[in-house]
Length: 292
Image (cartoon, rainbow, N blue to C red):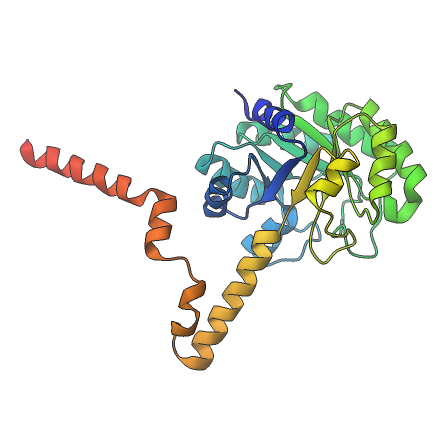
């Protein structure tokens, strides 16, 4: 079963499908343990966590691919990857799609912001004309040699053009061959509902913290027909605050003892990594060597 087929199967079996953001291979292992059927690699996450940069389109295809490969190598779950605007013109977009497929990625989303993009929940966004985004989608669809690979079209038009014009855009995106829709910057459940009534493709709700979209529950989103729910940076935000607290405690108190209760134990780490099985294999190999 291809990664794209796994992603589509997960979408069919879990309604709506919860897709959780993972920053690296280890967090992907933790997400799998928690029972998630699909994972996500955020472009903002790559920029923030791997490079210490803001989400302003600064990272490259190579940067994102490296993090994607690490995750797909560690887990067998399907991974949705943020490819921003595709990292260039039509030929660049085609290369991006081919490289993502080779990296065992299941799906990507490509957006309609200008090349110098911004976070979807920040002011000052600018979007391209509908025709240019249609060309991006067509380039992506044409480049895939695996028809199960998912091309998701993301739109940031709601804040700039309003609901009706955004729905018109999305209908063009669907006609261009997009498999699913990422509807960004939504503030009301009725906006999701209006899109779903007008567009028959699966629609993703981005439920990110401290942004424009309220933290709608899975039940609320299911009621209006959402097919996928994305939690892109929830774990990363929690990890970052925990790290800040640990660093501050050690620096100010000279010991980590006050925060030990908030730490994963060594045995818990070993359990996730299946560490003891690796040790057992080493012991067996060394024993065989001694016998010879």
